[in-house]
Image (cartoon, rainbow over all chains, first blue to last red; front, side):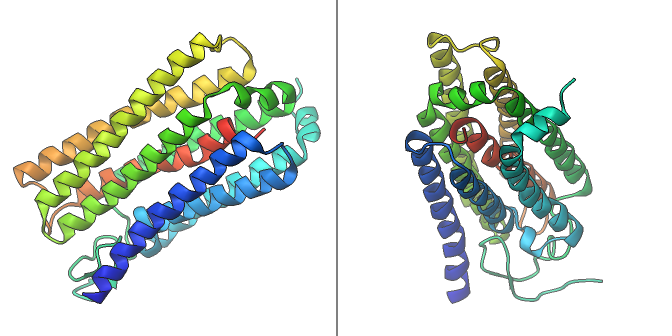
Length: 98
Length: 206
C-alpha cells in the first residue's frame, strides 16, 4: 500500500516538476536578456526534463540498457550542442559556409 | 532469463508483481523503437539545421522568438506534458487490471492532444495576422518546418491513442497482454520529448 502511494506520488511529482520548469522557461523567454548563462540554464532544464520524462513516464529507468543509453545520450548531447553552437557560433558559421 | 513475480516499482504503478515486460527489456516492441529512433534522428537533423541557420543569421534568430506567441508555446508544452502523464497513468491502470480507469486516463490524453492541435492552428492564424509566414525569414522557415512536422506527429500519435482506447474497450488489451499499449505509450512520450527540445529552441533561446 505504502509502495503504491509512493510511486503514484512519483508520477504526480514528476508532472508538477515538469510544469514548473516549463513555467520558469516561459518566464525566462518573456523577461531575460540573452546570455550564455541563460542558455546554460535552459540547456540544463532540457536535459533534466528529458531525463524525468524518460525515467518516470517512459519507464526507461528499468528498461533495456542499450535503449536507455541511446535515449539518455540524446538528452545529454543535444543540450550540450545547443550551448556549444551558441558559444562557438562564429566558428560554426565559418565551418558551414558554402 | 525468465523474470517472475518480484516486487519492483514500475512507471508509478506501485509494487507490481508479474509485470516483467519492461524490466531490462525493450518497452513495447522492437518495431516501435525502430520508429522512435528514426523519428528522433529526423528531429536531430532539424536541430542541426537550426544550429547552422542560427550561426549564419544570428540577428533573425535573436529577434524571431520575440514575435512568437510564448503563451501558445507554453500552453502547448503544458498540454503535451499532461498528456504524457495521463498516458503513464493509463498504463499503470491496466497493470492494476482497471481497464475503465485506463480508458478514462487515455481520453484525457487524447483531449490534451486535441488542445495542442487547436492551440497550434490558432497560433498559425495569429502568426499570419502578425505578418509571420514561412517566407518572412530563415528563423520562421525553421519554426514552421519544425512545428508543423511535430504537429503531424501529434496528430497520428493521437490516432494511436484512440486505437489503444478501442483495444481496451474490446478487451484486446488486458492486465496480462498490453505490449501494444506499452509501444503506443512509448511513441507518445517520444513526441513529448521532441517538444521538450523544440519549445526552448523556438520560443525561449535567443
